[in-house]
Image 1 (tube, rainbow, N blue to C red):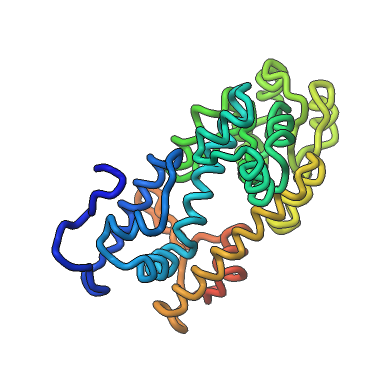
Image 2: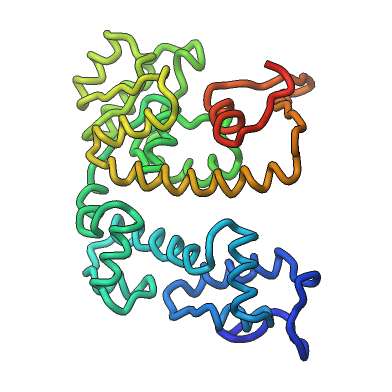
Length: 303
């Protein structure tokens, strides 16, 4: 499909009733594969045979962000990868992600990420290890893939498959998640040669002492909410701007999701279940409660 070939060939525009979400998913797929090219609203609207104004409104209503905001997300995501994995010049990276002007690209990158491309490239060189499973999510929000980390089997297949190959050294989940002594991971952590180790206050004083012989250790409090945990780690790593930007983006998505859910559920209550082999459990944990009941304002069927 070329840049302006319509997804639906007909003699008129597609009405609201005939426009499907799959059509807009095709538009998203197009942007993901053509992010390095000039892309306009008019071009995208033409591909689905609707007016630019209707396209703008429909995309925002469907996905909670504008098409250009989504395109920016795609470009910045690829820019982060180029900055972290290559030594290319900034002007070359800007062109590779669809920006002709490297100075405009730098301003856009800093607005979205919270730091300049140059600072981002410098900061991504630090090698980190996570010896606590919850810390992994916070590091990923800060665009950091740890060199060593325990892979949580409770992750969805998407996240497990996405990150299992990117985390080079796989640690074992230990206390308090499994009754396995923490010492089992010390050799792998030593071989990973991290600059910093991120853990939690589940660690015992003796364990922290042994970790400190490998690299400086920062322990987050498991009693804090996830926002405070994220900001705590970000402050330690001098990435507070990144964390606050991530939280702002999250809050925007939560507001959109909250409105959508309210229209569907109304005052209905929900119950989260966990299926394990032939057994069924009511599932609760701190993170789940924060997202579902505090952020999304859902009502639990049982407490």
